[in-house]
Length: 237
Image (cartoon, rainbow, N blue to C red; front, side, top):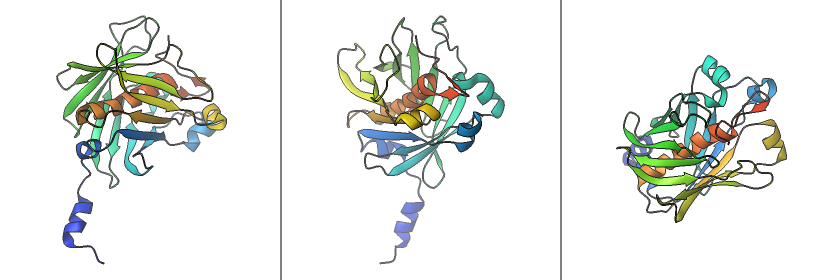
């Protein structure tokens, strides 16, 4: 059966990220392996596939930074991350400003802004100072605190996943998590291409789901990004 004109128009329409997030409770994020980076250690723009629980790619994320920033600032670099649908149209933008990478300066902690659609802020992820735990606060577009993310004391593991728990503001209940998934010895040793799983309640506000996606990318850069032969863990205490 040939597609009708209405079907063709629907296929050409951008996939609204709010509509997609309202129907799911899990996102998979797979970073692509960059051959040039593996062979030379020369830092390239990060690229990610964003998939649903069935493993179907629904979005593609690509970092937009210049060569000097990537290779001079390393994992602490400011960046713009553009999230595109399968037709190459930008549906979401993440903006990470340059911040201090040391926990000794709590006045200048990490932050990322989530825009969906691009140019329209829907929330923020702000690092919360703590002497021994990686902690973040998820905020709405008015910068009002909504949820917390708490990671393990030591962000390092072998042959197992690393969980950053999504908690209520009082940190009494766990409602979801961001998991850095173990990718195998070869991939872990020779690349910084990481896999993540994001889980949240199905009825969670779609804006907060988008903010959780932004938190996943910030966590990747802070704790699992490597430059050259040195692993950069700017948020590790």
